[in-house]
Amino acid sequence: MGDLELLLPGEADVLVRGLRSFQLREMGSGGWNQQHENLEKLNMQAILDATASQGEPIQELLVTHGKIPTLVEELIAVEMWKQKVFPVLCRLEDFKPQNTFPIYMVLHHEASIINLLETAFFHKEVCESAEDTILDLVDYCHRKLTLLVAQSGHGGPPEEEESQYGTPMQELQKQAELMEFEIALKALSVLRYITDCVDRWAVLLSMGPAVEGWEPGPVASAHLSIPVPSLSLSTLSRMLSTHNLPCLLVELLEHSPWSRQEGGKLQQFESGRWQTVSPSEQQKLSKLDGQVWIALYNLLLSPEARARYCLTSFAKGQLLKRFTLASPGHPCSFGPSSQTHCSTSCPTWQTCRVSWPTWP
Image (tube, rainbow, N blue to C red; front, side, top):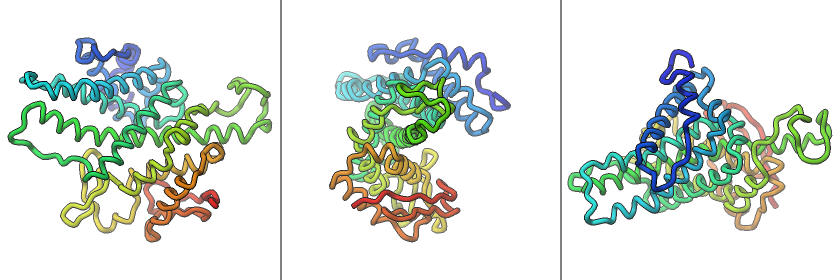
């Protein structure tokens, strides 16, 4: 793993092999605590590998041993625990634990898993290894982003303030709210990486019989010189028809919950904290805005996605509303039926030129 080694290669392999799903009643047990510790180590090693650009063995191990579905199942399980069990604990009048750290570990478990998935899903082959759980992950991301939009409509994310008179459980609830905001932003990145796989359907289907070795019937990787698509058509349908993600993404752009005005200065949420943006940087596209635009690009401009997206009058109005509001002075100026150009100052795209679909 290079110079930045938190785990030895053999140790990482053992930890990945040992990952398993836990039921709700097992949350906080000895075995669950040990797996939480292992996930923290794997998460930290994956971040170190990605930062050093020296290959990502953790992601490869997760794919090789088929553990991506396990991580998704654990993610859904801890989300259910937070929704069904944690509120009950907070309402119990006779439940006054002196040490709330075990409960905090369960709450933080969701953040650890989504962070590891964000690092892993940067690679498109991970979508394939997720198998049918990719649908559950899309549903999860949709829930988080919907809550993020709803939260931004009611004053934005909670402020991180020290409480002097709160009980330990009230303090824990406050920490859970703050953590939920960061988890939603991680879910946005995961969803964007999933949409990156949409174009692989388009490439495969558009090449068709022109590909040497093409045979009618089910696609078989042994007969093709191009990769098998990462996303199933059911996943594409879930994103476009069931959840109407393009409209949800437009709402995110409109509310921009990761930006705020504080003391007359623009602040953006990056790297886990609010940072003041200098006037010279305010016209540049932020990383989170870029994630949303790339996801919209993947969902609206991919030939396969465009063929399957039902552009109703409501959807058309929502999309055109966002494109009309786009600032002409912004480095990225988007508009339907026109050329989209991202200048070299754009941190998300260096140079690209694409054609938006013609919407009547």
